[in-house]
Image 1 (spheres, helix red, strand yellow):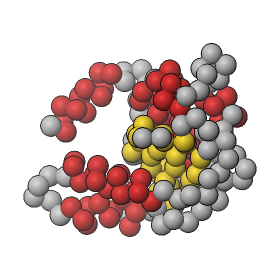
Image 2 (cartoon, helix red, strand yellow; image 1 turned 90 degrees about the vertical axis):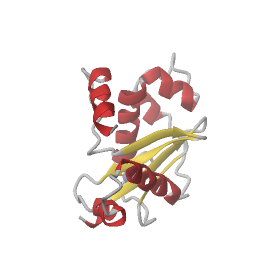
Image 3 (tube, rainbow, N blue to C red; image 1 turned 90 degrees about the horizontal axis):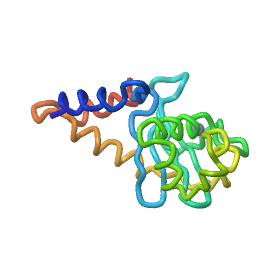
Length: 155
Ligand SMILES: [Zn+2]
């Protein structure tokens, strides 16, 4: 099952590959583009990042619900990575439609970031839970699921 979906991914993304090490999980879910972004400097840490549909308000925190140090009045590098990977996975137009952006005006990732809203300050730990659920779906039945899952942030 996993094998065949990996093969499919290769077919669909022959020119642009999703960087699943950098952004292991992302989705367009309810009113958010949301996902999990690996820390650039610390492999034991991941960030929970999202943009809200319409307002483009955003937030980024660690999986332990601590504020991201990169948020200084504008989206951080994690949010930029989330957006970039979403565009690779779904295409710019689909991401723009989902976020309700006028893609005739806002026609690049840079412009989306420039027109982002405000930091909501609301940490969305449930995104991390969804990511863990997703990981467990990929586990083999015989493996030790909790330990394997914990390796993502325990190193
Ligand atoms: Zn961040």
